[in-house]
Image (cartoon, rainbow, N blue to C red; front, side):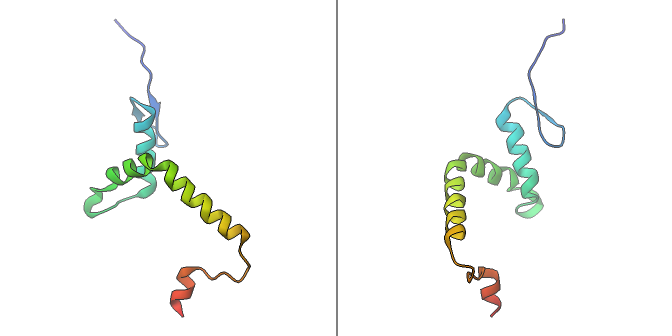
Length: 82
């Protein structure tokens, strides 16, 4: 007999049993390959998911600093060039 089930689709269209698994797949896709042969990607995606509140806080603080700073701020990558 057929039964109904709920699945969650990631950005590539793959189905997952939980919203978290679909989100982790999307995060892993955004990260690309991390480590040799991409073996660390799933772990990094899970860490980002678990630390989301702290990561969002850090970015919000960064955005506030950038919004309130003068136009003379030099990005680190440009400053390193000399």
